[in-house]
Amino acid sequence: MSLVAGSLMVAKPRSAPARRAYHQWTRKKNGRTSTRILSDDQLADYGPWFDNHKRLRELVAELEELSLAIAEADPRWNR
Image (cartoon, rainbow, N blue to C red; front, top):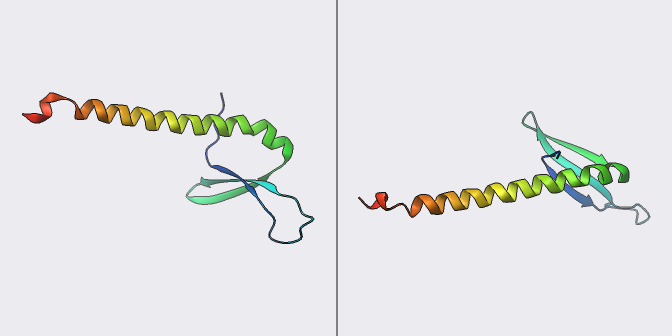
C-alpha cells in the first residue's frame, strides 16, 4: 500500500476551449508548494495511492474522535 500526500484535482484550462482538462497534484515539499501535472497513465498508476492517503486521513480523524470521547467519559475527570 503506497501513500501519496497532497491534493489531486482536475484543472480546467483557462482559455482555448479546445484544450482539455488536466490532473494537477499539489503538495508541500520542504515548506514550499510543489505542483505537478500528471499524465493519464500516471493518474491511473497513482490514483489508488491518493485514495489510500485520503482513507488514512479519515481513519486517523475517526481514531482521534473516539480517543477524545473515551477520555472525556473517564469519571476521574470529575474529582
